[in-house]
Length: 86
Image (cartoon, rainbow, N blue to C red; front, side, top):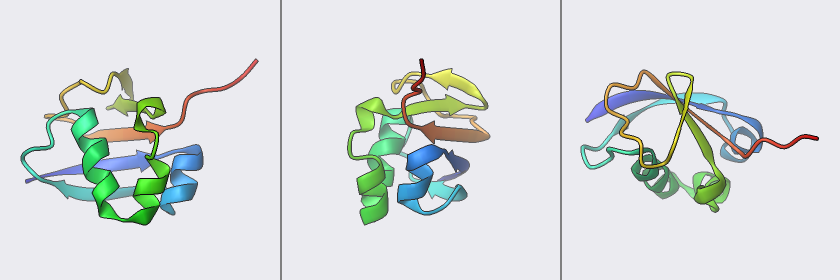
């Protein structure tokens, strides 16, 4: 297992109920998509926040990445909803 610092923004933070946390991740969590799937098993708040995980954006060490990006070596992973604006 590896520890990772997770940071949540906007309504992802509001629905999970915290801005950040450090979690132990099982060995089978190797990509951002795996991480999202794992988080959804941690409780109703996570399941609600990540219900439409295809719209969740991710950044590893403050760099935007796709869901198939490996998370090995990440110090921080940020999760946030799609950006809106005009």
